[in-house]
Image (cartoon, rainbow, N blue to C red; front, side, top):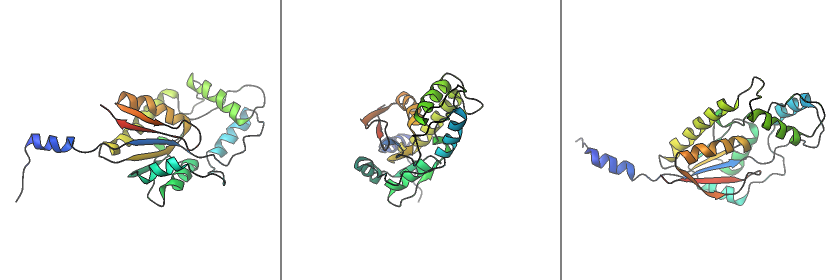
Length: 205
């Protein structure tokens, strides 16, 4: 026998579904040399290599992130090795869903004179990129659109009642925050933006 639910009953059942939480974490410390002095050409090569490396062999996840990973129903990571290795370190052998929508925003360095350490180049590159100098790579407006798509990927799972964990990147994680806030997700736990740090969100409206 087929039973047909009344419209109000269907609505009541949907509203009774528990909304899951969203945890957005930054990857662990990559296995990359930050002590070198390089020019802007050298930084391009350094950044390309940075996107190929995994984590430093001494890296270990924090207890807080391990705890949240254990409570997660769905674990996402960007397709970059440092994010995948981070997710593997906390997933306990469970499935990890990788998606390029979560990769870091690009860091094309400005063509200025001098040799600097990679961290210094990263700051200069991010400022230049923020104000429109993308050198043919993904622009800030395009990355903002991607951040909306990334949030949609996460919330699609959380609104179905799944606790979601994403292991991704420092700057792109920041770009998702205003999108989450605009959609009624409130930050209820803030562990900063350093390696292995995370922020947790719940739906409030």
